[in-house]
Length: 114
Length: 114
DNA sequence: CTTATAATTCGATATTACTGGAAATATGGA
DNA sequence: TCCATATTTCCAGTAATATCGAATTATAAG
Image 1: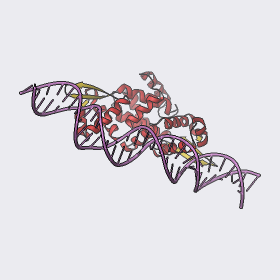
Image 2 (image 1 turned 180 degrees about the horizontal axis):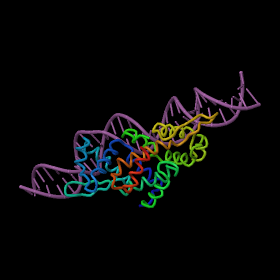
Image 3 (image 1 turned 60 degrees about the horizontal axis):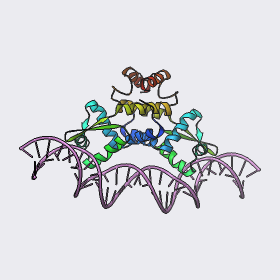
Image 4 (image 1 turned 90 degrees about the vertical axis):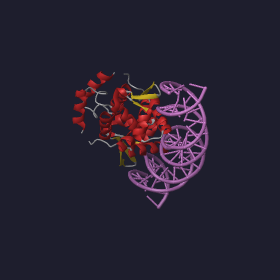
């Protein structure tokens, strides 16, 4: 997992920076590796299909989710590697060493992630 | 440092989800506790004063920075507690335990932060 | 081949964000 | 008081996002 450049960090952040999209992503995180079909997400969040589709494509553009067709459904899954990279970027660029994590844990995370 | 609700997480995320604002925040993180006056930020990022002010107020609204008047200048500082809380929120809600950090580090972070 | 289901794309509309010059506000000093 | 400096607020124009019904595409099954 590489550390993101500023541009991809911005698109990852803006993918999550919207109430419906954050809710969608959290659902997918909970769902784990089995993911959820679009219709099930729409149902759970009570969103019209076309609105959901708009947000899913935004999340996909930001690299935060992946999709895979399975029969008539399309299964969406959270991209944990991307989330990982985003966390690493924030830790590295927005936390200044002194804050957010004690130094030792920060070092350990860097090794884990990069 | 409390764990954020979804609404404040969205405003923190959207505060950072813009190229100029992310750049501003990173500068302030680097500057640390001494912070930077608005004019210096405008100079470093080559932004018109009014545009900078727009972004600063957005960052402030999202709770990511603080300001303090000092003579004719207004000094801006990154709010590390807010960044901390955002990291904790993401870890808790968008990382699903299995991912982003090995379990032991995640536990340690939760204790550190909450 | 037709019908039903799952999802996306299109299109029209409404809302919100971004930009930057000009005017207003606040402070400090001559 | 008057002027210069630092910054914000105002305003108008432009661009990007969000919403959701209707039309379209893709798949599966009878």
